[in-house]
Image 1 (cartoon, rainbow, N blue to C red):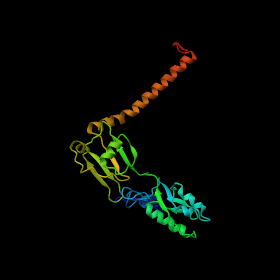
Image 2: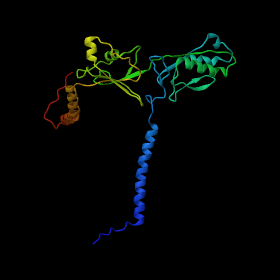
Image 3: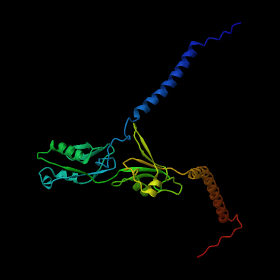
Image 4: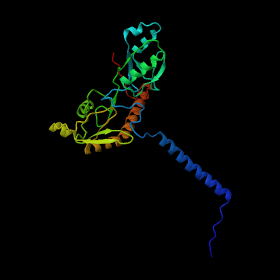
Amino acid sequence: MTNVCPAIPSWLRLCLLAVFGCLTSCGSFEEVRIRQLMHEKGFGTRANGDATRENYVGGLDLIQFLLPPEALLQTGAERLVELTIAQPVGVDGTIFVPFVGPVYVLGKTEAELGALVTAQLRTVLTFELQVQARITTANKYFYAIGESGKKGRVRMETDLTLMDAMFTVQWTNLANLGRIYLIRPDAENPLVIDVNFREMLTTGDMKPNFEIRERDILYVPPTFLGLIARLLQRVLEPVGLAVRTMLGVAQIRSAYDVVSGQSDQQLFFRF
């Protein structure tokens, strides 16, 4: 005998195909949106550059302009004095230039910014003007994670090297100084450098004393025993929180019993 499979109704097949198509299309649509948001190169910020070579305008910087004194004495140019006051970069990456309006400045060096604002002002002023731009803050950072004393963003300093950065952020007793990772993030070609910092300290060999650039990641890993200690800390942290909570509830209950007279304990007040 041959087994004959019951035919699936056409309406059921259409429902199944519709559900399957919806699920696949929804999943692919989300993936397409994520791929569109991904970066192909760089760190992912709108402002890119090498601040250690030539400083550029970032989102946390203050911008100030230097103008010749005679320009401020020109008739109708009184508002130019606003340029001499340091102003932060807006969330949209612009600064306000009198007589012009918002000007996009993210990623521009001081020379490029001065030339841009000069060209913008020459279109609305009746006299020749040359302005110079200054980035009055050094809000550039690198990142420290792992067994470092300072974690998170650390302000960049002039001519900062790996050794300078390590002594700036410090390290814990669980740090593995034999394997310090200097990570240079990039969407296309990220670079990870394994440095024996202990050997640098004990031998004075400065070949791996690399220059720290903006947005570099300094990862200080733990030793093997330090890894076990951190694992136990993670495991026992919820237990410790529960014990502290229970003790706190018990103390509140005991204090309430004493105040309400339900406890035999006596309260002694000292004046």
